[in-house]
Image 1 (cartoon, rainbow, N blue to C red):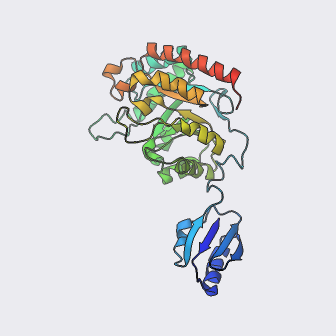
Image 2 (cartoon, helix red, strand yellow; image 1 turned 30 degrees about the vertical axis):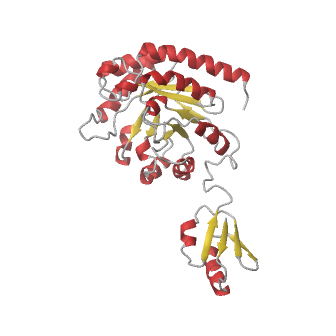
Image 3 (cartoon, one colour; image 1 turned 135 degrees about the horizontal axis):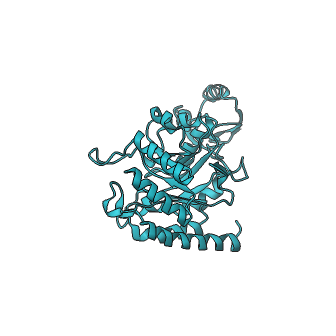
Length: 339
């Protein structure tokens, strides 16, 4: 980290700042120019806030030389993280998985029917919303605890590990037998929830916020990992832009950027990104080509009557066709291109 002081800063001010920085156990080198004094901070500056340093009125600017995230940073962990789920299912490090299922769990018959269908097509994990964060308070909010019980019945019936979203840290006991806990876009910066999830060992699927930068996203992953839980999976689910032709704008460039910045697995959600069922197949294939470690796709046995996100949900037949193309692209990428 570099701290640039304003022209004319008194020596006493410099000493005051150095005394403040000393409490953070960093080494400070001072370079005095004709008009500017620069402090170079060496050591672990993660706990240092640029804004707190700028609060000194004689500080002109503060710049970081390295990223503020350490546990999620590829520079410090060059080998890709492989998250293991269930009975030998691996995500990351060359292991590709597809998570599929309905936006929300609606009944026992529905979730088991969809689970059997997506498994037959090649999906290895089952998704389904029990707690549903909805924009309108009048929209279907999910079956909550009952929804988790139905997911567990589908897991028992098919053997598929389950993925479902948590909205409140108080609900964590209900997730005892859930295999991957999903943190939705709206909760990406719910730091108290992230801290709680960092204290348990279950894998966390962290979705990108609606309008968050990649660094903010990685800092949220850092919250989980700082608590001791290293099993984090990042999920690009589209960001909010000026475009209205799709529900959100799928940022496929985020995959390439994340592969350079972090060792964590990266999966893509083309369903929430587009909100349009006709686009899901093409963007699923595109995500595989871009280097994603997996996909999470919404599938419903009767999208027209779905209680949540029917317009973006594939039918089991559409999912089967999509999976065939996903498999072909993944095979091609595995054989032809080495990153």
